[in-house]
Amino acid sequence: MTYCGQFLSSMEGRLRIMANTSSRALRLLSLLENHRYWPGPELAGRLGVSPRTLRRDVDRLRELGYPVAAHRGVDGGYQLAPGAALPPLVVDDEEAIALTVGLRLATLGATGIASDADTVAEASARALAKVTAVLPARLRRRAEALAAMTEPATWESARPGQSPDVNPDFLATAALACRDSERVRFDYTAASGEHTRREVEPHRLVVLDRRWYLVAYDLTRQDWRSFRLDRAGALAPTGARFRQRELPAGDAAEFVRRGIQSTPAPGDQVEAIIESPAAAVRQRIGRWATVAEAGPGRCLVTMASPADGFWPVIALGMVGADFRVVSPPELAMRIRDWGERFTRATV
Image (cartoon, rainbow, N blue to C red; front, side, top):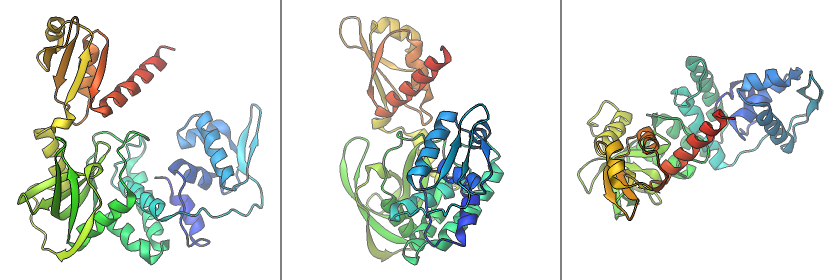
């Protein structure tokens, strides 16, 4: 959701409806919009993508009605057709909120982009101001609250398809409750599977290691808590206002980080079946894991999963035997990602 500054600047005087398909598509459009001819390799390099990905992004723009001409051959490249009238990209409410989230994280350096962070943050801040300026009043209040009430605390940047789904409308409602100091109620499923009804005084939203958290004072527990929003049910504002309490941490991001590091949730424990005798596995990783017999020639390994999630992958790889991840699903996805990268390295 970054690199939108040039596109938004060029479109601001013509549009009152903001648009978003993807961050790369927006930046690609901004580069093509001056009708300059771009050699394919140069354009791919500017966007930081492969030629194949560039072709997909160009096809996406064409589907939206942008006349992008492609020139084949050694000196092949792309450009917008001269004199073309560019159609506006229209966004719905959820897309507008998602755009705001992405720009807000970019202004705080939470995108994981390997480039000049200050330049990206400054451009994103300008783009965010332009986005909120052209949003309808109905959406502007929600977008501004979400931008103001979100803090990043990311150990690892998210990858598409790996983050638990959180409804953008849910995020906007939570942000408004934080900004307006309004109590909210919601159903919550803990890592242990326990279902409870919570009423809280919301403080801030935090993005950490591919997950969204709501930092709030729990009126039932009479203590501060952080709630994973993918485990929360529909958020219901109560209309009751409150005076913000003092958070027992430097900021909300620190509070969430501290809680995860000190008390890993049971649901975040790693379990794996390893096709090797327990004695052999204990000899290799017994210092860091609990190893129990699970049948002839196999064992069950249990270990804590730190927030970065890297150690379990390394430990299971050190065993030198086939294994199957029982939980959590995120670890299986991480191992699959590592395996694909290692395979590509051998080609």
